[in-house]
Amino acid sequence: MQEIIDQFGGYLYQLGYGNKTRQCLCAQAGALLAYCQVTDVREITQGQIKDFYGWLYECPGKRRGSSGLSESTIAHYVYALQHFFSWLEQTEQISYNPISGIKFKQHHKNRREPLSREQVEALFAVAESLQELAVLHLFYSCGLRRSEAAQLDTRDIHFKQQLLYVREGKGGKRRVIPLTARVAHDLENYYTNQRCHTKPLRLSDEPAFMLGSRGMRMSGSSYQTMFKKIMARCADATLPEGITLHHLRHSIATDLVQGGMSMLYVKDFLGHSSLDTTQVYARAKAAQLKSL
Image (cartoon, rainbow, N blue to C red; front, top):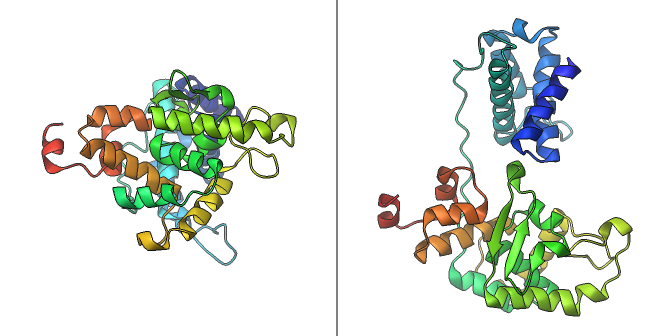
């Protein structure tokens, strides 16, 4: 059945999904095929899918001694299977879509509370280096995801034109983010006075816009570690517990909407596929929601 999974991966590539997302969706669809132990996708029944769904709540977890996957991970499995069977139906490899009539448990994401403008300003105020200031701009001023910041190359930021290019965002989406004069200046200041003086450890790290102290491309976890150091100096700002870089993305969305920016524009700024997702990110005023 590997051939059909490879074909599914090719379909996802045509839709513009990134490498990691394609691999994940294919692996999750392949997990169902392995569970059902079928040689023909037409043999998969609705009952088998329901059994597999129930098994996801009981299967061994990644952590030792844990059982069952998290609700968010299971929701990703459902997403993968819905796409997989929709593709099979579209390509006429099955005459009936067995997943279409199944009702799955609704996954409720934990809502991230946006930071206040004062809390965001407090974070910028305690930044001790050009790099820390640039990191805050990438995640707040530009609203990047961690994966997008980790993939950011020097060629992706045009300081004079005040533009930042996200070459491959979530779902393989590309977008262009306009920069304010202040953001463009601070990013260029980091690049000119710190990044250019840091020697890349490996040839593969040479294009990276953000390099760590050892000269390696900054990973998503490295960004979060730096953010924790910044937060540790911000004791007077009464920051909520457990905040991450993603809270900055929620915060800029809320600030833009409450500043009068169109929700549709904020949707494009964040790289969302659905306006519903943008509404989850941004705390819009009641009058703004009524106008949508």
